[in-house]
Image 1: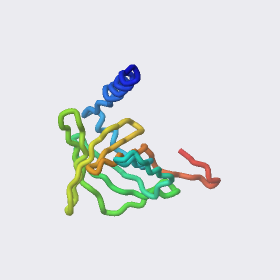
Image 2: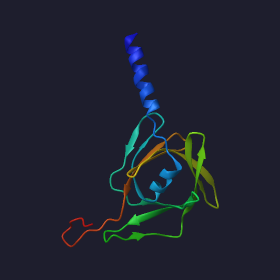
Image 3: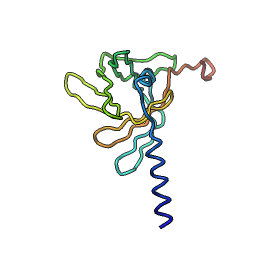
Image 4: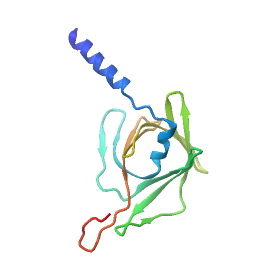
Length: 147
């Protein structure tokens, strides 16, 4: 019985410690994000190593903007094309959503975590996408990473 009560208390702590995302946090989504892993509904994980593309978000003060796939190059530039998704931030009760739209479809993802360095979203298929903030890759002549 003590074990059950202990497990319940720990579970309540995790639920109670869920990050509250505010409208002031929305600006943190702007920039380049690299996927680290996906957690499936059954708990299995798929880890990502080096990624060929990043997600670039640009959201304005009206909570509208775009998401675009970009390909980092070793000289610090990005290969881009004209393809993008329109994004709108939507607040509903205690949740925040990314509402995407293209000429062909619409879909939403719930933002679970949003910090300066981490983004976690949940889609309708119950897949959690974990991203880390990143930026351009620039290597000097000796293979050393430069700022």
